[in-house]
Image (cartoon, rainbow, N blue to C red; front, top):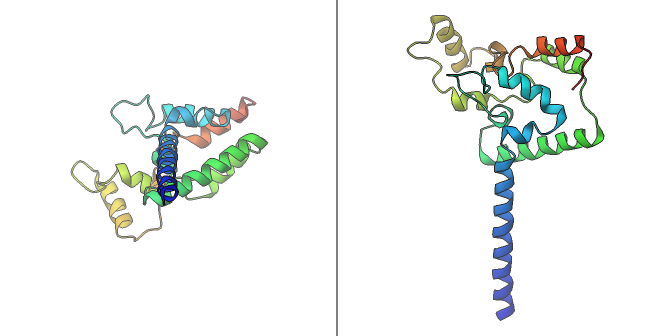
Length: 180
């Protein structure tokens, strides 16, 4: 009986340590400094810094990568999506399989939703879409959105919210002969 209790106590301690380590890793990988640590993300970091939600814009909401690029519809969905994205990014980094600048432009031009941007991320910060100080045109557009009378997403209208004019910046990088 003593061995069973010892086993349970030891199991509980190991589980608690593993949970603590996992939680600290989840927190540490939510920082922009972690996201920009891979050279593939340097370009996107630089466009974010000068974009509307980046660090160079005073008076606006500053968003971290995970604020926009992970869902905010519950802890499990967040963690599963984070794990999948992390494994995919790690695999691409290790195998050097990455999208070309032209592939990024094609994807951004041909989709309503830029790569892995979640509506729940926008709505986490932008809760009040209709209120005082909001222009009438925006009130009407947001009203249709809130009533689900349109299939437009936040980034359908606010394409430059995260990284500025990302397509123009990608095209400029191509002109300069660069790559990610």
